[in-house]
Amino acid sequence: MTEPGRDAAPRDFRHVLAAEAVSVFGSMLSRLAIPWVAALLLVATPWQMGWLRVAEVLAAALGSLLLGSLVDRWRKRAVMVASDVLCAAVLAALALLTATGGLSFTALLFAAAATGVLRMAFELARSAWLAQRVPAGQLPTRNAQLSMAASLSETAAFALGGWLFQAGGALVALAVDAFSYAVSALCLRGVAEPAPAPPAAVAASNALRRFWHDSAEGLRAIAERPALWALAGIEVLLAFAMSLTDTSFMIFVARDIGFATGWLGMIFACGGLGAVAGAAIAPALGRRFGPGRAMAFGLAAFALGAAFIPMVASASLAGAVLLVAHQIVGDAGHTVHDVHDRSWRQTAVPAALLARADAGLRFAGQLAMLLGALAGGALATALGTRTALWLATALAAAASLLAAVALTRRP
Image (cartoon, rainbow, N blue to C red; front, side, top):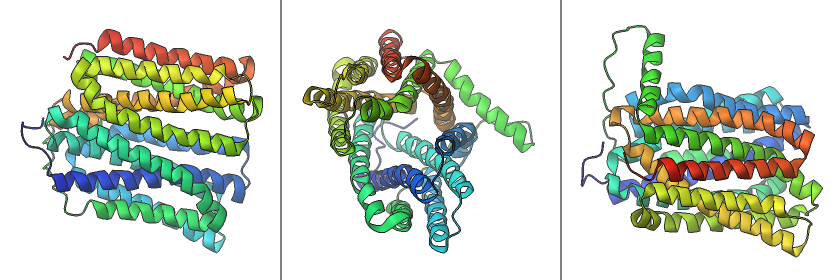
């Protein structure tokens, strides 16, 4: 745990904040550029497009438990730098393959899986670094600042990504993406590196047995703490709800309702405003009502925002207002929840278990995301996209109720 008063130097935190913003920019560009390369350059089938998403999520899910063990053993800044450098190398290789005409769908699958694992490593290391360098009372504020920077960066990536691809093609988009990760790594130069917390001694010399022991310790830390058990339940409900939404949302608004893509792009940009607002109010809500109630409030707002989507009846001004409300209210609520969720994870377990416990929670969410994608496709096909979106809303509301019941008292 962080000792009282041992806050990260302002300069160090500014560098980590800058690295987070640039890294998120690169991550969002990857989520645009790789599918666009598949769809427009390689003329991928819908089945292949689905496998791109599965490769990213499945690789992150399977790698999360191993990453948790490694991040706890290794130095956190070094993990963040290595993750950025390797992401830059993967995307630079894609750009080179594009330039030489050697790009294949197999290469894209590898890139999607590799960047999924590397982004997971970066996030685990960044969270653990913050927990070791910032007093517990200041974590909500620092996490809110990270969320705000990430939201602004995500908005910029979505706004610029399409123009980059349109103006320069796949080569330019992938090259800019690789460059952004290199810049993120440079931002971390000189950041203080807290020593890794020594893990518990393991009698086994076999590396595989040590890995299973380390992973089991992280899962045991979750099982032994009711609050983390509740966080795991919320993680699963939210991941399932958002995966259901992902399978139906675009079909619903663009095809079933009939909004033009230009208007949809402007509507989606409003989500950044909601996320910034959520990051701004999250610390105050936590101080006033406590982190558990703040999370329940944020999740209730997220569920309300989700409910606005299936309420849309036509591609009219009223429908656009509902979708804008979804972006602002829903993203604000999700950010409020996310800020306090991060802070809770960072203070609930000893320093030696931080990354492993966080990885266990993320592993549950990644599996739920995969199941939600499969269930969402089946439900939307059988019952329609509007019904699937209402079910996603109900799951988000259930997550809010769980937070209100289980997290109103700090353990």
